[in-house]
Length: 541
Image (cartoon, rainbow, N blue to C red; front, side):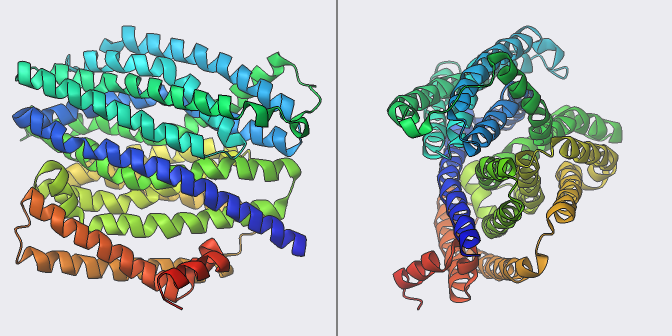
């Protein structure tokens, strides 16, 4: 029993540590990816909304090809490296990385070629989308190798290099795109398509920076990887390893394409549905599309990145437990992962909804429709995050076939709900249709876990209810303060909105943190020792 507790505690500590690094990397890179919007839209001026719509259309195609080229590889490599490390086959893990690089280079060349020469096939009838897609092909060429290296390091549970590379990738991307946009719009004020094209090409610049960071991390860890304790017999042929990588990657490609697939359904159906309804010009439809597909998406994806960070941590830990056949450890890590997800995701999403007006005004200037869509999208980000974490856990447990079935059900539901949702809710319709579909998928995942592992819902009920209750209290308090301050301070000005936003974020964090520490919710998530240390730090003993 003592050994089980120690194993569970070690696993929980690894998940917390890994999640902390991955969350830091995801959050900082997402924040950078949102902050650039302020100067970017300012320099684009009256073209900003159309530029946002163009950017979103190009990036949706890019995300699909990037997912095909990379999504399966880092997760598959991470899972297989963790599996062989769990069996102490460390030499196989190293050769697995080399095999994965061969596959990634091939995938990058194939997908980049299709994107570049087939751009006209994906532009949805808009010639402006073609150069944007071609500019993104360069990033697709090199990112698969970057993704495989991240997966290899994550298989050893080394999350820090991945987090650092995410940050520097975003930093150099933002620097290039802002510099290019400023120069283009200053020299040629009407060349907004060229500005968008260079902004998307910045993804390639960022990828090169991230590759350099990961290369440095690998060189630094060469001696550690070659330690005598990490040597093992080499009994697996290279061809078999490549087959394993591809076999493991294919389900990952399909499953991790989930959000990209839903976004492409929006891209190719929303305009047609709105046109079919009549009464809307092409400019108006593009404007509404930009509000939910780019403006809101850029902001609520910051919250979803929390789920993505936890998903990356969960896969190798669950895979190692599966390799050992440790059912108790698998159940414990599923429960830990779910509770950590609820603890971070739910208050973050509700907090974004509470300060939605201020956030939107700071980034895009005040727009009533945009604020409403962002607040709604903040709530929808919870089922989006549920899908991300649940799918990662299914893959970590080698339940990819079952997960692909669940995703198929989700896509069918999305297609059924899309038309009525758009007709009745316009720009919020696609968000609702995706949210409902992903919520159903998550239910199927949890039901599957419960049938196989017997999840202890009675133990999870109290902390889950606490998270919900404290999040609701925080949401109501912050919303009331935001509305109250809006009576005395201009809520539509960018600078005043930023000032009020700082107050709202600080208040929300203080309320939720106080309630979670005072009522021992943090003890359940992080362990009593860490919780006590935090209580002493904030004088809450």
